[in-house]
Length: 231
Image 1 (cartoon, rainbow, N blue to C red):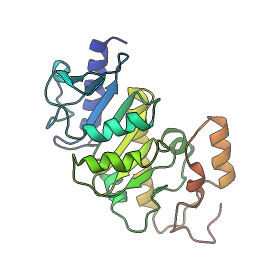
Image 2 (image 1 turned 30 degrees about the vertical axis):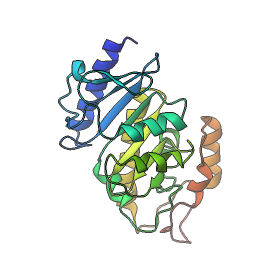
Image 3 (image 1 turned 60 degrees about the horizontal axis):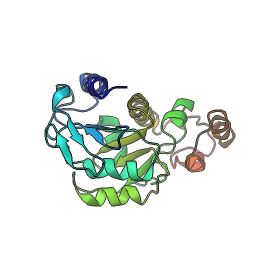
Image 4 (image 1 turned 90 degrees about the horizontal axis):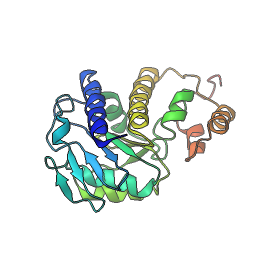
């Protein structure tokens, strides 16, 4: 795909996310790795609903700005995901309401903050990790992501928002949408002893779709499940 077309796609996906209320104001950012090793990144202080393809930040393979507006201050967390997940070609970070709400709950398992509820959650998000709170733009958040050693494609930044990596821009956006819907579903079901996917069902989905990552953590990721809940 040409860089010009990719710029248009970044803006189109960003607008769709914004118009559906998945990231308000000037929050959220998107990056895509280019074939020459460089990157396209959404600019700092820019609304995802009103991006100009020509003003997206173009970085070279060393992270130096080549053209466009100044890059998002969250660039370090994007770089950390590309560094640790070598197959990643796009990263999306939003401030979507339900995912942020989940990140603020007590007693979360940092290996898998959401239980295994649906097969598409497993297929698109895998086990969603939690990293401790750092202020936006703090390089320490990149160190925290590096500490996950590339095991997670979806991550919640505590009191901040979700970030996902995908092997294409479309895949990263779809994974982000699935993560937000899974967070919403989990909040709707809290206290209701829902029937979650069993370990055998998780393993079946993992085999059928060749999933990687620490999916075993999902089998015990819901501390609120009633011991008598049907499986």
